[in-house]
Image (tube, rainbow, N blue to C red; front, side):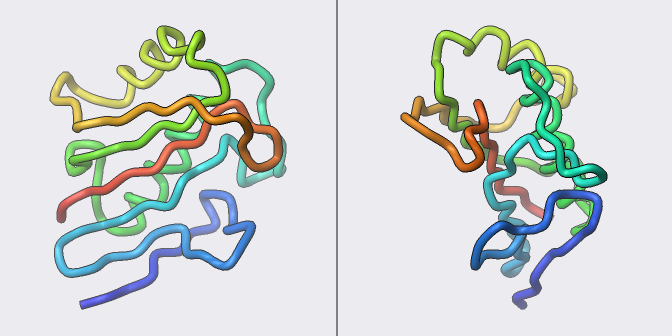
Length: 124
């Protein structure tokens, strides 16, 4: 089974890709920038951007009938690894102690000059 996931509660894709996709019992969530889907604005601080990116991930998962407990892997892209402790602080708020596997990578630039982008893989 393959199914595209789309919700207006997360920012629309800004390129030729899907917000998410279900393949069998796996749910793939494309990298989410910290864009507020209501007004299209991006917050300024790394804490606010981390929170918004994760909210966007969770809304797409919700559309696939999943929660944060279903996430098995995330990847974080950030433009400044010096923000890692701040990212971790916000990230921990979204999970109940059973954290998914994770990679974190510093990149030179992200779309729309975001400070962070987060993608996820979940199991239904």
